[in-house]
Image 1 (tube, rainbow, N blue to C red):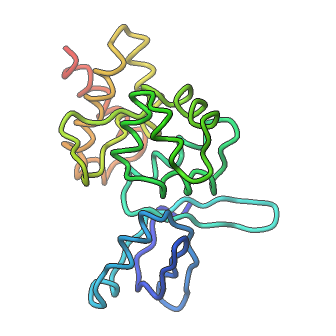
Image 2 (image 1 turned 135 degrees about the horizontal axis):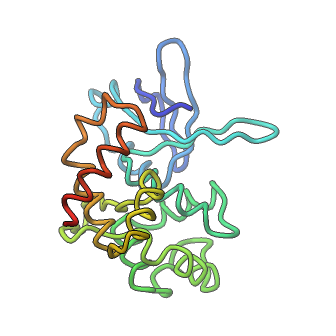
Amino acid sequence: MIHALTGILVSVTAHQAVLACGHMEFEIIISAQTASTLSQLSPEKRQHVRLLTYLQHREDAMVLFGFLSEQERIVFEQLQTVPGIGAKQAVKILGGMSLVTLLTALDQGDVKTLSRIPGVGSKTAQRLILALRGTLVLEDDATPGKAPSPSATGRWTDLSEALQEMGYDRKKVMEILARLEKEHESEMSGLTAHQTEELMFRNAIIALG
């Protein structure tokens, strides 16, 4: 799996970026929100751009999707768990509004706001809410313009479910895991997946009391 690509931003359009990494150039599908951010980079900053990636294997091709933050990538992955939502539709949803607005609308069951996203009608909005409400949780200090953390989703789903089975409150578990991930980010970078989960589990139990 290609976790991320770092290189020179050759070009950017409304839905695609081209990144030169060494002697290779990669076409990467991006959301409109990411495209807007990249297009405003100065020539100097375009010389060193890092995009987190998601590689989709299809019968006829392999497609790379790019994200400026881990939060955006996690939401992208979770959107695809909704029946009828594929990778390209997930990117369009991410491009329709900021992460803060999107996750707030999902958490509040705001069909009207979600329906404003191009290609998302009221039925799709209701389906998104039914599948993701309470799953992608904003941190308490999230503010407009600041990327929220979809706490305890994606990477920590199994750990979150295990803690909930032990009787801990779901929302509290997700908040704790999100906080611990930030606090131990540098420490976890040198650990295996198994060691990372052990570290998170041990500290989550302590934090949850």
